[in-house]
Image (cartoon, rainbow, N blue to C red):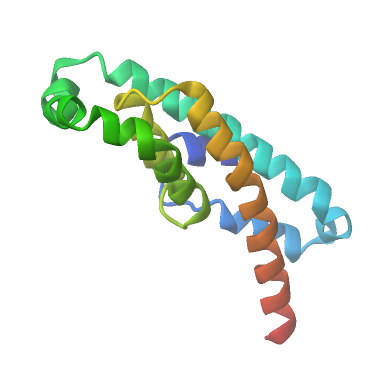
Length: 138
C-alpha cells in the first residue's frame, strides 16, 4: 500500500526504503517474491499516475503549461516517449512525475505500461541486489 501511494503521487518517501526493509528483515529469506510484488505494484502505481496525468491534461492550467510543448513536439514525444518513461523507471527520479507527465503529454497507455513493466520490475531486482550486497560490505 505504501508503494502504491509513493509511486502514484509525489512523496519524499522513495520506494527503495522498502527494499532495505526486505534486505534487513526475515523477508529476505523469500526476497524474490517480495521484490517482484514491489515491482508489480510500482507498475500499477505508474499506470494510476498516467491516468491522473490524462485527467489533469484536460484542465486549462495544464493546457497552458504543456499545450505549446505538446503541439510543437508531438512527433518527438511519440518517437521518444517510451525512452523517457524508461529513464523515469530505472533512475531514482520520482517515477510518479514521469508517469503524470506521460499522461498529460498524451502518451498511449500501452507505451507507458510496456516501458514500466519491462524496466521498472528489473530495476527493483537490481536495486535490491545492490542494497543487499552493500549491507554485506558494511
